[in-house]
Image (cartoon, rainbow, N blue to C red; front, side, top):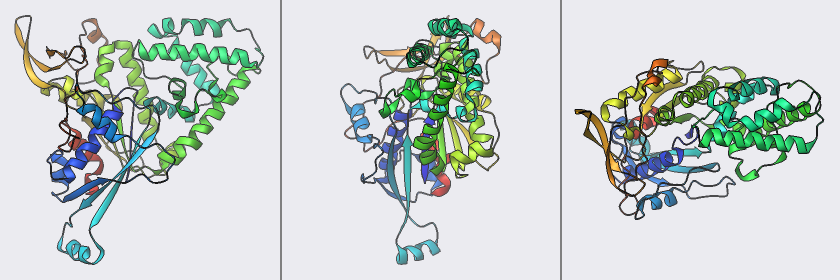
Length: 439
């Protein structure tokens, strides 16, 4: 059974997979790290182990290295994903019936192999591009770049493309200069403004191929002209063909279940424009996964049966706000119970590694629900009132007095090599929604 873990940039995919692997291995040793999944399986999980690396060419997800970072003194967050990687875990299950027990005596026990895929979140935003021509992509991208704070971040690039004369020749020096200005604008939008709807993904994270000429394209105000526009259109088409051949076809077509991670709290903290940008990106991804037709068939081979959307870092808000977080994410992705090809959809709030405990703080003389943890900067204990989480996409007046604090907490230090599991919130419920039927 193949599970893809995808998500918007910096939603915590590497942390999620590290916790998933550590807790499944611990559960296989009898630790009660995933109670909801244990209940779904009827307590039949007998063991879990990593499948040794074979001769595959795809990099292996370094679960042991990431767990070692959490076990260090002081503990460190695992490094974020920079390339695609995979890992396999075998789960040994006791039979569920007398017939199963009889079959086990003849054919051996039941075993489920879980194949996991981790890849840079920036690449996920290439998914909606696959249905767009260069001209359509140019118009949509420039429209976003000219709005609000994006326009200031992309000022140098916008000045460049707006000053181009008609019928610019297809010179590589012009194309590369424009690409570098565009890439720098995307980086500023991501790193300083918290935006996520940024394409193409490999402009921000080129992967092992580096910044090859196939990446040297950018949106133009007059994308149908010849010369430079024709060159950029060819590179746009070649880029999409390469992404299909190297990534979407060989990987996405083979997966049966998907987890899509979203840092909805970080988007709230970054302000109205960043939140709206995240919502737009999420809507485009959800549409590509749900709308059916040729794009869905091409990517999934009709194999995806369950999709779980998860709002990460749920431990940054107190318990009563987590239901609101689920409601907010559900409002953003839509509440269709199933896609056209039968992919059941669920929405969750998750902290793959729990860093806080619920507490009570005093704000303006009144008690408010808060969280308590160690701050990453300096390691000092802090009690934080993060602010209110809206139940649905905020109305415009929300931002007039919006307050939402997102501190960076230190991860808990794991004992030994993580054999007793990793503390989390909601990971077991999410896994139950994705793979509970298989166990």
